[in-house]
Length: 118
Image 1 (cartoon, rainbow, N blue to C red):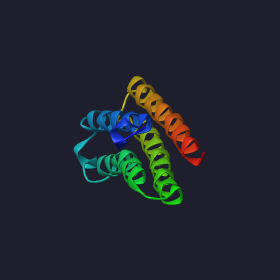
Image 2: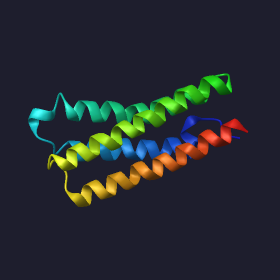
Image 3: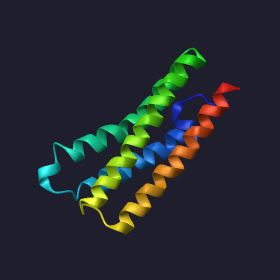
Image 4: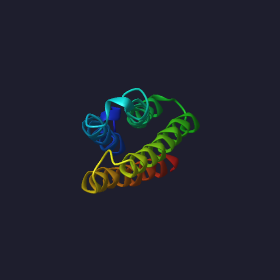
């Protein structure tokens, strides 16, 4: 029985993603500090935050609402990473690494959501 959101594999993967987003966005141009850097970090933080909030909700319906928000934020991060790559802010190698993390986080989150519906 899971007692804390920190035990949820989907939260762990999302937290790893946030840490990597912070690392990668440190290298973005200063002009993006209050635009793309801020936006991608907020979207990334939203993923594990909503998983945590959903875990504490009392009904499956409420929990699922927050898990779905987390899933939407994950898609937002994916687009912002594509944009950063296309603008030349991150290398193809860095993009591939972090985009793979988003894919892993998404699969894990989908699995968590499905397991909660049972």
